[in-house]
Figure 1 (cartoon, rainbow, N blue to C red):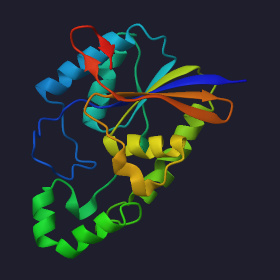
Figure 2 (figure 1 turned 45 degrees about the horizontal axis):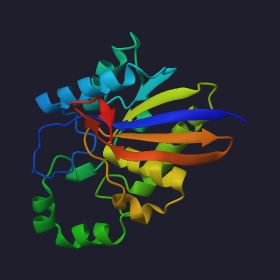
Figure 3 (figure 1 turned 135 degrees about the vertical axis):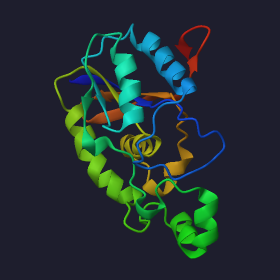
Figure 4 (figure 1 turned 60 degrees about the vertical axis):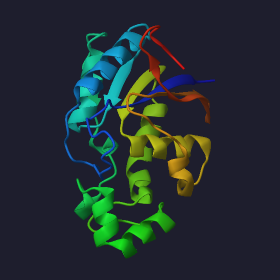
Length: 207
């Protein structure tokens, strides 16, 4: 029976601190902390025999993937389908601004997180339909160990898929900057080995 390890990583920090914004597909670079997180991930994955590294084509994810890939002298394969949820007219705007200017829409999204689309943007259901076919194609490939470097929203959609969790629960799955998830696939079944694991700076291990 076919077996596969799929490491799913979120990109490093982008320097927003507590300033919560709808970043979506805005092309922001890694912060100094984010580059340090990516470097720690490189040291973790230096010891993992990866067949390939896949990533979104958005800068902060490509930066993270490039740093990790340098340990393997490989080049990440960018897939446009792995881009973050597109927030349309809300892109780049603080939560507080949207809540104040569009209280009805803000409330509607909170009440139907799976299906509500911001103006000109995507819902999580739209994101699911874009991301999961690509994820499944990678999961069914002949490779035995792969790394996917993605975004919080994309990672949550993938995790909902492999766990069989409705998208209504998408925000119950925490995804910190630079975290690692490990998905084990055997045949047609998925198991989550660990979720939102953070790199320990002193021991170069995950907990």
